[in-house]
Image (cartoon, rainbow, N blue to C red; front, side):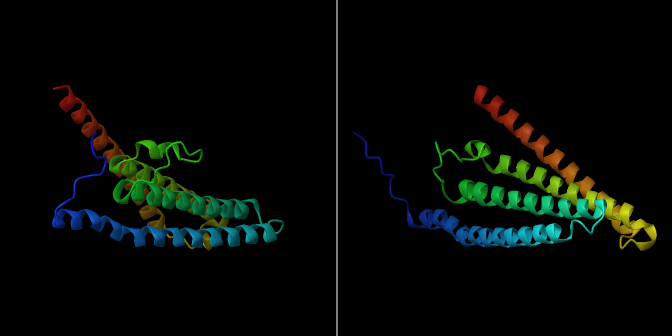
Length: 184
């Protein structure tokens, strides 16, 4: 019968491998940041409820888009906290748990990068949509948005999209290379 315990490591590799636990305070800090977003969401939701009858449809839409933005950033935080911890620190051992996120079963650094890129594009899309709605509802004379500012927001959004396509394409190429390497 074999011993299920791993063989002892040499001191230097053990120190290097244990250094991954230095990331734990970072993930705990992100959990606290998520708590801040919950408070912000509740505050903005309360503000919406109190003023909904006095606002125009565009003002309500902007407020709802702000709430969606907070939720998407919170989702991004969950992906980074759960996926990053699982990938870089330690296993969460959630197999069989009814609330285990479906994406967690196949998470790795590549999958996490693509998911984060897609989340960032979603957040950027909401910001850009809010800008366009605000410009339309305020009119160009009262707008706090400059033409250059809107142009740069659009360019940055397009760069996010191109970056995500590049990350996904590179990931696809790497996966194909792994499959070819295993076949030989």
